[in-house]
Image (cartoon, rainbow, N blue to C red; front, side):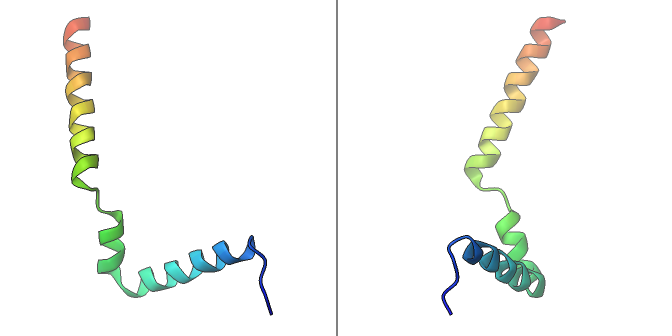
Length: 56
């Protein structure tokens, strides 16, 4: 039986959830921010600090 393209992604999502539920360490790694994401967040915070300093 051949499944349609719209069905396959949902099956993959269910399979990934099942694997993640059985392996919490793998799930934590997937949810961990990359260095680039952390640097971007820090840059955003610094810019917000600058904006709030100027407005006071």
